[in-house]
Image (cartoon, rainbow, N blue to C red; front, side, top):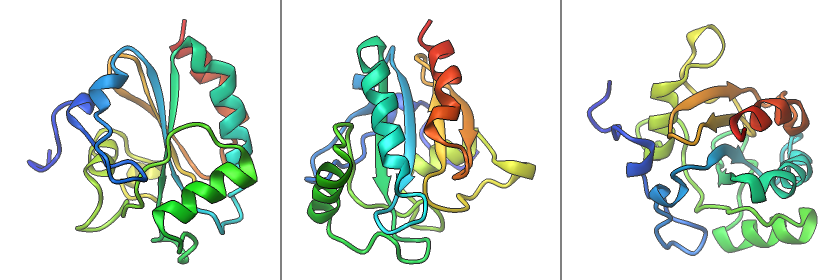
Length: 165
């Protein structure tokens, strides 16, 4: 494994939309879904389903975290503040939205280096193909599944429920 990839999910501490550290150690014992998001994408309406899933399961230990990314068709051009406002005003998002990051390439955020190292996509592809790819992490910090942009949040509900039992 790449030596720049942390050993544990809980060693990661990305920056939130205000630039403050968001240490993943605070997520220990919770199920986590990480999604690379964009405001001007055909999949953007998935924010609604993500928020529904979050509201349904947050009290049982689900945390959804959105990572804005502008690497796919430049569909996330705004500032971190503009992105956060868009999510709140248009979709009522209450789950954490992080600082805009790269998910592929040499400048990929450490969170995405970790996720891709631990769970390949279709046919073993490690890169992120498009916006709204989702990773599911169990309460012990293990990356248990990866879902394409075409997987709706509702279609993942059963897997989330299983992790929360």
